[in-house]
Image (cartoon, rainbow, N blue to C red; front, side, top):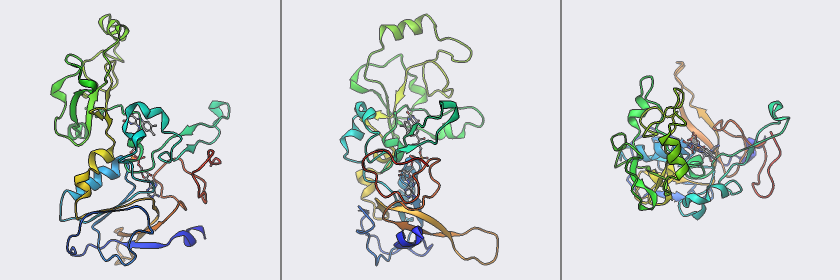
Length: 305
Ligand SMILES: Cc1cc2nc3c(=O)[nH]c(=O)nc-3n(C[C@H](O)[C@H](O)[C@H](O)COP(=O)(O)OP(=O)(O)OC[C@H]3O[C@@H](n4cnc5c(N)ncnc54)[C@H](O)[C@@H]3O)c2cc1C
């Protein structure tokens, strides 16, 4: 029942010829979204977290595609606490965290713990700890070889030579990456010089992103020019928002994805999403979630699921 009463609109995704281009739009809420919208979309993306922002950004680079990005939270572009890396510890009590709680866990003496997850453009990448890892070169290493940020050296303009390997970084990616602003402490330098952490399990290496990330080395961050580079800052840039084939709908929840009645074959054909102006029944985009029906994020932590 809750789903029915809260679902106010249904969008259909048609693989139809494109309509004439208009400028990209960022709608702040479902109320602002024109009910008589006649555009068709080639892709509707649920959630603008790390994955959603990258997908929307890359797909809309191709002007043959009309892309609609739907995000439950707000815009993060000019939120100062999400831009200044040193504010990382102050984000948990903001609207940009879903503030999930775990169930009581036996291994924790039945205590519950907070499970932060990002809510807003950029998703968790807007509130995370900014440690930059390209992953492992192991196995086929296909993802590793696809991921290149834009290496910006070291925040604060210090010389990071000797603390990273220039050969394993890209210099023109969307996500800005760097070494920390601080010079290594005497303790850090002694640890490295004396090989204190040298072991087969955690070898002492030059660069965290050389393909073997479980090592002892200098931390690299998704920070560029002193600012946190979330997926939204990297991909939902001012120029991306100018694209006529990209529409962003904020503060709106996808409550359901619906298969289109097919031709009797087993092929799954999903072309429709149901959306609602506030949280109702969640799509399974998070392993932890609010209890159904919670309609306010103000104040204390919500009850536990
Ligand atoms: C506090 C914290 C610190 C972290 N630190 C690091 C780190 O230092 N380095 C690192 O590599 N990783 C870190 N991570 C992990 C990393 O940020 C995540 O793994 C990554 O961002 C997940 O990306 P995603 O696209 O899968 O999901 P998310 O980025 O979480 O995106 C999901 C998006 O979907 C939206 N959404 C959810 N449900 C709906 C719905 N029904 N309708 C519409 N929108 C919806 C959400 O609001 C959110 O924007 C951290 C994560 C957290 C929370």
